[in-house]
Amino acid sequence: MPTNQSPLPVVALDLKTFSRQAAGVGRYCIELTQNLVRRKAFDYRGLSAPQTDLSLLPPAAEFPLLRGPYDQVKSSVARSFWALPRGLGQHQVDLTHCLDPLLTSYMSPRYKQVSTVHDMIVWKYPSVFTKKHVFMVRQFTRMTLAKSDHIITDSHSAKQDILEQFPQTNPEKITVIHLAASGDYRPQAVDLVEQFRTKHQLPKRYFLSVGTQEPRKNRARMIQAFKEMKKQSAFDDVGLALVGGKGWLQGDEDPEQLRRRGIFPLGFLPEEELPLAYAGALAFVYPSLYEGFGLPLLESMGCGTPVITSNNSSLPEVAGEAGLYVDPLSVESISSALVQLADQPELHQRLKEASLTQAQAFSWDTTAAQTEAVYRQVLGL
Image (cartoon, rainbow, N blue to C red):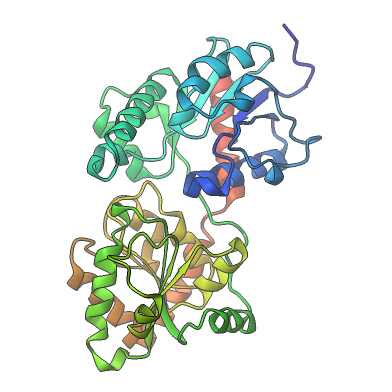
């Protein structure tokens, strides 16, 4: 077997979710990988997959890929049970980090393994997924918890959920490491925000929703709450911008009709436009039923935009005193929060300032440093 010539322990990062198409998990994989490689505390190597966005990887000289059959295997099952064990047997690796439970690799005991379990959503809300998805994620999560030498999770709320579902798990085996927003999410130049608003024909005052269409994102109640607010003539000038897929629409409503009612479906925006969308909004509205972390909250707050979010799961942990909290099951509660931020300039300014302060408490460099501390612990360094 090849020997490790590096003076540093070799840490292999599974890059199956290294893509912006993988939503929040993808952002976690991209940002954590880039920051770990930049810090150079370990000899980092990559385990690519067909889904990996190779264009976003650090330079090969800094972050070489360990080639193997996993390069061409899309299936999580085949990758975990066959491709990774077979491929990594050809390389000398001290530790692997699986960045999502569906990436758990069943390798020789000589490799230490750290895994990130982001949430317990398939236990909390199984009805919002297909039966196949629930079965697969539950099976992989169980095996991940059993096999891994250490577990990283995104929030104290998520850790508590794991321990409630798996009480036999040693709490000391789980470390909470918060995520952060990309450095792109910061206050934006006024003229650029105005150009964005003009381009998309948005009113000067608008609320923003960002996300893919999932029942747990609770967009239907949010839209109903907005319609309730609009019954008051004082808010005739206020709009609601929706970024993401349009599957949430009931029926085949014409976009122009929606715009006349103050609802602006923008579809998917280029990555560079998202900070402008946040920065121009009155508030980011995120009344999710459950989140393991809630990264969009930090993106909004980093841009100096207040957030309206749910009083459940990890969301208060992320938003802190910068959030205006609602009962996600109550249209009235959500509508009341919309009214407050549109009607109370002093409250809006206070939350705007608190948002910037709260966002500064999170950074990817800190996330990477805390992740390295877990590696050292597992390796006995």
